[in-house]
Length: 452
Image (cartoon, rainbow, N blue to C red; front, side):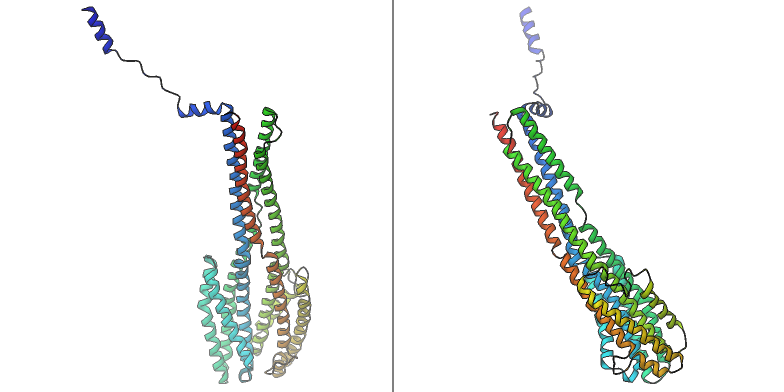
């Protein structure tokens, strides 16, 4: 009876648990503790570091390339178009006053100029609305300009119609139209110009940013590759590992390319600002202030002594043109710092501007003496002779337009192609980093083969 009982007890006893193998983390640690494991880990870290450098370099270079392209084809043209909208509207106001003063003797070219100003401004407003990139401030200004411009044109046409009937109420309508232009339309145009200029400045900052993160990662990758080669040399007494050496050369080439491309692009961008954007903005300010002064000159004759408002406005504007620190180069100093191709037209414009001031003073003296007709003939005439203040102003503005074109050309020459340089830099960084990662893995692989 005892033997069956013992057998039964043994049969009912619980078998000892089977011994479990090490977990995945333990196996990884054990594998990494071996020389081949350390090599594999080092290869993975080096390849990941090199690829991270390449990815960041590609992203930063591509981002800057897009911004540089915007400078040339987006925000740059938009900024200049906004300034042109302002200038066209201001010129339309001055031309409307001139046509009103000439009444039935208004030459066809004066009327055509006014209509062309409004048509061009309307076209540029429509184009800007489609290219403004969703800027809330710009869209609001464009919407307001679209709303107020037909209203202004309607007031001018009413003033013209009443004036042709010989009624004095026409002058009141024209002054009201000009007040709408000066008090509502032009401020909105200025806000649009400011918004587009801010967008251009932002693109310049983005395009000219130094890719510090990519450069730092590139240096770190070089240091890691160099340190590991020294480590292998100490362990194996082999001077070179061809794969790791090739990876180091590829990363070094990418870092140098990144730094040199950045320096070249930033130099070109700064040249475009120095000889294009900055002098062009100063010139736009001068042209706009001169147009407003010309408007005040004509409206003073429309008022026929009823108010000294336009005389004061003229004096304030001319003081700004001649002396105000708002203009880094005023009228006489605009040629300093700009491209050489703009110097001649700007010097000629300064002479015509001085002639305009002299003729205006002569007309103002005649008006003060009570000879309104003589003042009107000295300011503008139906024949558009060269002896009037109007002719001198138009000659100055034509020279300023030539200088503006020269500055736009200088901008395009300097900034054009910068996006291509940065795009090429992005491609090179991507290719070289991929080659470097492959070379590093190949170099580690050759060392691993020795353990097989």
